[in-house]
Image (cartoon, each protein chain N blue to C red):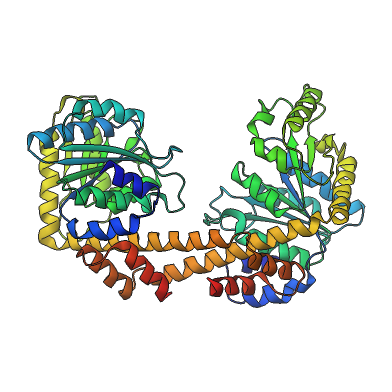
Amino acid sequence: VARLITLVENEAPGLREVAAALVKYTGHAQVVGLTGPPGVGKSTTTNALVAQLRRDHQRVGVLAVDPSSPLSGGALLGDRIRMQDHATDDGVFIRSMASRGHLGGLSAAVPQALRVLDAAGFDVILLETVGVGQAEFEVASLADTTVLLMAPGLGDGIQAAKAGILEIADVFVVNKADRDGADQAARDLRHMQSLASTKAGGWSRPILKTVASRGEGIDDLLTAIAAHRDWLAASGCLADRRQARASAEIEAIAMGAVRARFAAVHGSAALGESAARVVAGETDPYLAAEQLIAAL
Amino acid sequence: VARLITLVENEAPGLREVAAALVKYTGHAQVVGLTGPPGVGKSTTTNALVAQLRRDHQRVGVLAVDPSSPLSGGALLGDRIRMQDHATDDGVFIRSMASRGHLGGLSAAVPQALRVLDAAGFDVILLETVGVGQAEFEVASLADTTVLLMAPGLGDGIQAAKAGILEIADVFVVNKADRDGADQAARDLRHMQSLASTKAGGWSRPILKTVASRGEGIDDLLTAIAAHRDWLAASGCLADRRQARASAEIEAIAMGAVRARFAAVHGSAALGESAARVVAGETDPYLAAEQLIAAL
C-alpha cells in the first residue's frame, strides 16, 4: 500500500496500469473527512477514532494531508509519533501526503491514494487535513462523510471556520468538551446551522461533544458516522457523491495531462518560432495560442 | 487605452481582434519592472520616475499590479491619490490591475495590458507590483529592465527578498538613503550580488542610492535604466527577452483556452457518464481522462 501511494504521489510509470487494475476493487470503504481550525484536536480525534474502530474489528486507513507543506510525501513528525500506537497492527495504515504545490491542490494525488486504500480493503478511511481554508472544502469534496471539529475557547473558532464549511459538514463535533464554553460552542453551532441553508435529503446533522484525549464521546461519533453512511446508501446520495467525486477526479487528471503536454512544448522550436513572429508583429499571441493548441 | 485594458481584463468579446490589430504597433516601449519588499517606497519611486520622465518629454504608462487583491481591476486607493499629480497630463497613464485569482497569476492579463500601452505609444512603461514573492519573479519576467528596491532598516530587507530575485534584477536601488544604514544596505547588496551567479553578457548591475520622496538620485536611476535599454539592444538580449516573454504569453493564453474548454465540459452529460462508469468499476479515471481530452 505504501509503495502504491508513493507511485501515485510521484506519478510514476505504471500508475495507469495500477489504476486500471485497482478500480474493480474499490467502492467498499467509507471515506470520512475530518476538518476544522488548527488546534481543535483533529489528530487526537483521529487517533481516538482509530483505536475505537480497531476494537470494533474495522480496518482503518488514515490519510493526513498538509496542502501547505513543501514536503514531498513521507511521514510528518505527527505521524511518526502516532504511528507508534499502531506500529504492529496491520489493520491500520497511516500516511501523510504533502500537496507539493500542485495547481490542482489536493485534487490530483489524494483521490488516487484514497482508491489505493479502498482497494486494499480498509473499511474506513479517515482523511484529515492539516491545512485550513480551501483544503477544508477539498477534503469535504473527497469524503463520503465530513466531520467538522470545533473546540471551546479557540478564539471564535466557529467564526474562524469558513461559513461555507458549515453547509458541507455532515457531523459536528465540539471537542475538548471538558473546557469552559463547550455548551456555548454547541449552541453557537446550532445557531449557525439554523442559519445555513439545509441540505436536501433529510439528514439531520448531529452536534456531538467529545474529549478525544480521553476517548470520551468517540463511540457516539462513530455511531453518527455509521448512521450517516447508512443514510447515504439508503437515500441514493452516496452514488451521487461518488459520481461527483469521480467527475472531479477525471477532470483533474485530464488537466494535469494537458499541463504536461504544455510543459513538453515549453521552449520547443515551434513555440520559439511563434514567439519570434509575435515579437516581429507578424502575428498576435491569441492566434499563436490557437495554433499551439491545434498542434497539441 | 483605459477601455482597451478593461477589455483585456474582462477577456471580453473583441479581444482577439484588438490583439491582432495592435500587434504591429508594439515593440517600442521599454518595460521597466519595479520590485522589492513592502514599505521600500515603490510607489514613491514610481511617482518620482514619472515626474522626471515627463520633464524629459517621455510619455509614461504605469501599471500597478496587486496579485493578492480580490479587486477586479479599477483604481486602487494609491492610484487615485497619485493620479492627482498627473490628472491633466495626457502623457501619463496610470492603471491598477488585480489578478483576480487567475491560476496563471499575472501571466494572463498583464502582458496584454502591456501590449495596449506599448501600442498606444508610451515610451516607458513602469510595471510596479504591490505583491511580494512569486509576483516579483513574474514582474521580472515581463520587464525589459527589472529594478529591485531595498531600504535601510527594513528588518533584513535584503534577506527578505527572495534570493533568486537578486539574479534577475538589472538595477539595484537603496531607497530612503538618507536613513541610517543606507551604506550598510548597499554593501550588503554588493556582497549578495557577488555571491549570486553572474548574468551572461557583460551588464554590470549598478547599485544606486535614492531618496525618492525628495526626488534625489532619480536622475541617476533613469540614466541607469536607459543605459540598460541600450545594452539590451546592443547585446541582442532585448530580442531574447522579448521572445521568451512572447512564448510565455502564448502558453498562458493557450492554457487559459484549454481551461475554458474544461469548464464547459464540467457537469456535462458525457463527463457524468464517464464518472458513473468509474464509480461502477468499469473504467479507471486515467482512461476516462484520456477520452475526455480526446473529445475536446
